[in-house]
Structure formats: C-alpha cells, structure tokens
Image 1 (tube, one colour):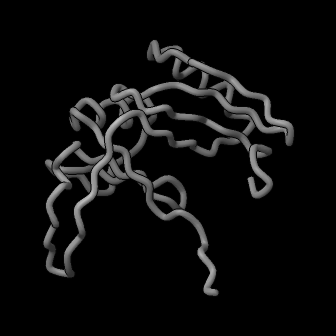
Image 2 (cartoon, helix red, strand yellow):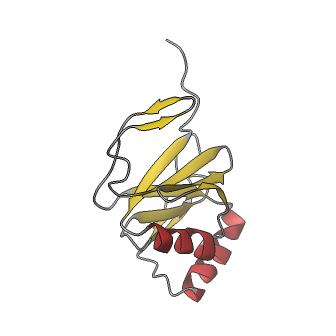
Image 3 (tube, rainbow, N blue to C red):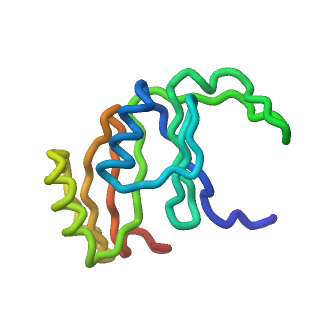
Length: 136
C-alpha cells in the first residue's frame, strides 16, 4: 500500500470570517497565505490551517485548474498546534494577555504537556508539546 505522509490541511468553519481572522491573526500571530471572502489559509510549518465561512463551501468551487467538491462543518471541532516545550509558558502568557481562557491542562504520560482554549466559534484549540504521541 502507498504511504500517507502527514495531514496536509485541516479546516475549521466559522460563522464570522472577519472575527475568526482577527483571532487567528491578532491573538495567534498567523499570517494569511490566501484570503478572500470565503476563506483564509495559514501556513503552520508544513501544514495548512484553512478557515472557511460556514455554508460558503456547500457548492462546488470551480477554478481554472479544476473543481473542489462541497464541504462544510458544524459544531465545536478540535485542532492541536505543535509548540516547543520551552515556549508553552509564553503561549499561556500571551493567551492570558488577550483574556483567552485556558479551559484545560494535561500532563501526558510520555512527557508532553497541553493547554486547551477556544476560538470565537467555540472550536477547541490545543497547544501541545512533544511527548504527546508516540510519533510526537
């Protein structure tokens, strides 16, 4: 069987794209690679975080190179961001400076640590250090 290397993209869906952009760009410091009225794309190392306005991707998107089939999501989703162990405290301080509540903390058996917080749409976000999984 051919190998799958990694997850290349993950998507979150937002009720208010401008509000989501302000959160991810302002509070988390992400820089958009692509942004239009329907979506924003952010590079995270070798992966991409996509933010779509909820409902705007329910129809096929036809571009010069082909067609993207419909997709959408509802309800609180989850994304974990890999961070260096020595920077987790800085992230916590930054979140607190933006009055973003840290809802949970976890010490993982393999030595990793996680902090959990939410974006304005209620998606559960996680900053996780190495030692969380066998491969991370």
